[in-house]
Length: 106
Length: 145
Image 1 (cartoon, rainbow over the protein chains, first blue to last red):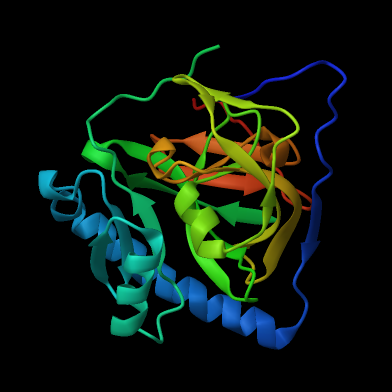
Image 2 (image 1 turned 30 degrees about the vertical axis):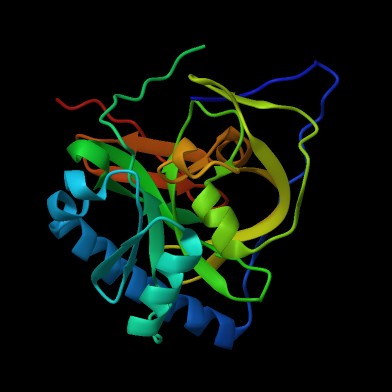
């Protein structure tokens, strides 16, 4: 649960929504999405190994259908990029130190 | 417009509604990230990993962001992120958003109601559907006979 705290006079910032129209940008986005889909699928198939106890408290980057672990974003990103420089569909997660159940509450 | 998410395994095998997107970094590169689709979150909040990876400049929050564990340390970023639409297009969102500064505060970024309230949202675990829909899309609820 994430709550916005503050007084009643607070006005949330405006969010603009628009569409990409440049064909080159759209093609790049499509290719990036294809790579990320492959990485996501790989993570789902290897979720038990990735979330193994030894990796608790670490940051993981999934790139090139491979997992890279480390303690800092910079370290993990550098290793993932060095191994898979052409993969634009990488993403990171933080692996929580301990098992917990998340709930919604007010 | 329809933006499709997925039900994905997260920590300890829990299955959660997640949508993949990309955040525009300060160097002009779109970098991938996952959002937990969270109807209980007042605001969209980027994880500390997403914040650090984006290298976006940030400034102090005007109001605090709280979670179940208390008030979280956050900053404000001017950000653009995008999602792929089911028709091959791309929807871009631009505005000011909160971002965590503590890596262990969030497993992944959170897509909150500041964004979700602009659309209809289908979160159906049984049917394996997670979809954000708007504009020329709609949905129907039918009674099975």
